[in-house]
Image (cartoon, rainbow, N blue to C red; front, side, top):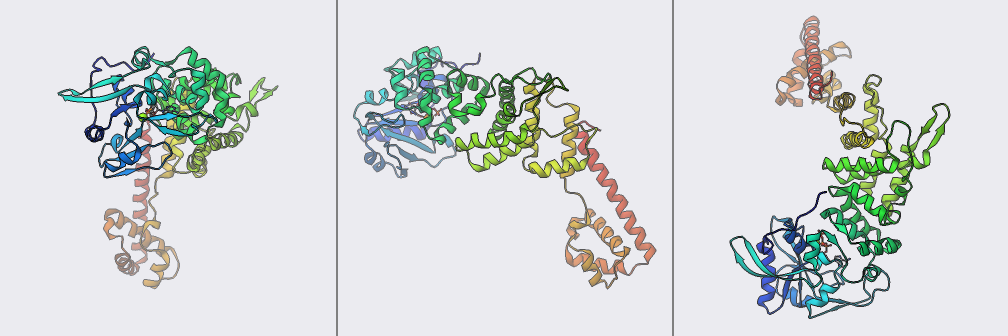
Length: 504
Ligand code: ATP
Ligand code: MG
């Protein structure tokens, strides 16, 4: 199984200069400053930290004083030190005073926060042992920075053993802040670690407390599980830890819902396999959410058909939209995300038998799902196929379908793109309505296709007047020739698209 490795070169660390500067500035003013949390954990794993946290015995006012650009907008003492740099991970270095936390009476946040002068107090309030290791930067050598590690809870041992374990008594720690229940699963999935048995038991026991946590906070952790390399493992872990019904109750209902004979997996496993393929392809959150929710209407739509002697799921796409919207709404996903995922869920059943469908059917689908979503819908279909256990993600039929989508979406070459229209031609060249107008438009288009710079109303009006003076037969011939040439160009363009998808 995949796992992050404990880095053997763990005495020298690659720390960005901007981060070192923040720590050294504090130390030069007589304060203590330690790297702390996820960044130290990631350094020990040889992984690039996403962001950098520093903990210190300075209080916010003292921190703010020593840096030119900071912000401080929370109740927890965290000061953001702002750096001007390309490297996103150090643009804001978070500096937080050592904290002592009073009682937690609501499973969400401490009743009050007191700053402390002791690093030990701060390590004690951290969630997991692997996140409670502090690192003091000592000296630079040619490979990076050497440091002194403070590890009061055997975090390094747990990193070596790939274990997520709470600092102190798990039930007490989870009772303080229920978000930690989900953080444990997220961190385990991202790192490929397992959760210690007592920590797991406490999570399963206290899972219901997640109900007290704001949707946004849950969403951020949940999205990270989906965006990890192994969302399938993450979702199974959430189920095993009783977290699933607290986060996506609708998905819990898909467990054990068997499908028709064409499917090897129940709705739950099929959904997970579909998300997993989206992760394998590195596809974005919206596709992963759509993969997770595309069949969420099935448990409700399931009927037994005596004629078919099998289960049917008519309307599960329509029902699924409502359920998916509710689930994502509860998790406070932005409306833009919800709308997009809802469209993908709604249209995921598009009929792709290219022997039977026409371009106008494809055009209708593009109009329904939206041009901006149609390729994501194609990708969702690929995930859906693999999630069903089909061996081929992109068979002839689907490639042919995608070629048809591209054909209906490309801008057709028509006289409408000219900077002149029939009415103007009639006016400027004093012509009556009749076939001549069409001939002139086609001939003008021909010229513009050869030289797009000619597409100005000035030039086209002049040319139209000249053409209007030509003999009828001559003009008809010119117009027809132009049209034939364009038809040929259209055909060539379509052929090119089809060969790109290896279809006829
Ligand atoms: P990553 O940066 O990869 O998201 P992280 O562990 O750094 O992981 P952050 O949310 O950045 O996660 O938190 C920084 C540190 O703050 C954690 O490592 C942990 O020590 C502490 N922490 C964060 N959330 C909690 C919490 N709910 N309870 C206790 N400690 C927490
Ligand atoms: Mg972090």
